[in-house]
Length: 144
Image (cartoon, rainbow, N blue to C red; front, side, top):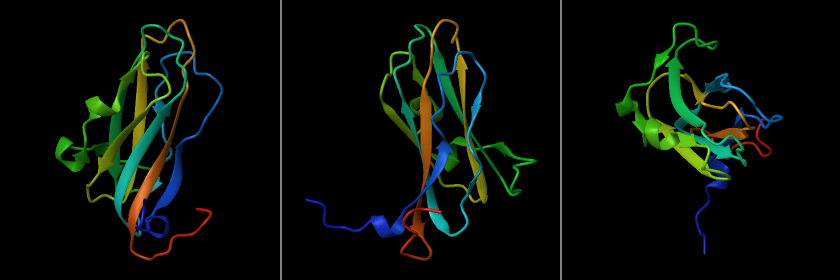
């Protein structure tokens, strides 16, 4: 039985909102996440039923100091928890979750999912950024 409160210390931000089926190889660029006031960030991806039979999905994470991420750079592997390879997935990974954490020191971060081989079906992907260890708790409910 759960006995610890994480409810008051976590904040959820839409990362990739659900949309109608995606049918090509256009990169799926997440919202830019502002980490101000939080000590940790976890990106969670959710796949739906992907009907393409040969698609693969690579994940990258960018960081920067500007709110629009101008001048951003790819996050170094030692600033990630988990790996980009483990965060990626294929057409066979229906209705699953993937996660990758960020422990860098930049204020703004975003995630990009880049499909390849998506040429004959529909793909469904959504995600949420989980900001944790809030400097000021409890966090708002519902999240704002």
